[in-house]
Length: 268
Image (cartoon, rainbow, N blue to C red; front, side):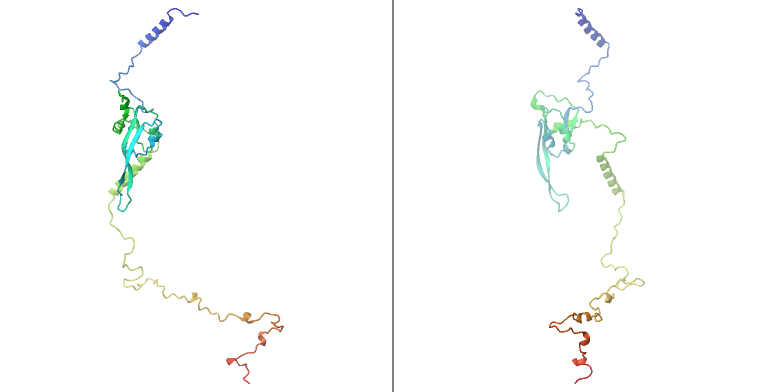
């Protein structure tokens, strides 16, 4: 069926009539700034104090639009006798927004929270070369970064805030506590030991701990009497024939000797 002549015009006029009855919602920009969502990706702000020049953001950028220059400085030791340390000092931090694809990888990989998204979007330039903004401009955009959303009331306190609060409470307690006089924790040089008088003699009523007169005769093994040890088993020759077939001698066959080596019963 062919469309009726003028049906398209009627449909267009119907849309016009419906729109005329609605309230106007035209945004009066730039006189009225738009209300942007809190996670709007406008520009990237730099918090320079947190930057350690680790170069992680520049290495992870898929467009290579981040330029960083730095130099090293020697830091003197914090305590006498300590070792000197070297640290990186930031010289240049620039982002070329003509190349930036607003992926947010640099913000996500920064381990020290030095980069943040800012909702600012009014940075258009007439020359493309002026879209490379240095660290001074990035720092100005840092103050336009909105505050993070509040945590759930039942959520745990962030570790950073808990550590800072505990440190502050500890310092406050140390400053409020009165300074106590120093106390001796051990005997000083020249102080007599317990149980002795200042002259070195044992005090009355306290047992002496002198072990110089301890009787050690019971443990002296050098004076052990071995005279009563029966050695007859060592003097008894083994049973059996002698070396030349003679019968073995027994202890009863040995002549008894007296003093001087003479046999008992008198001398011949």
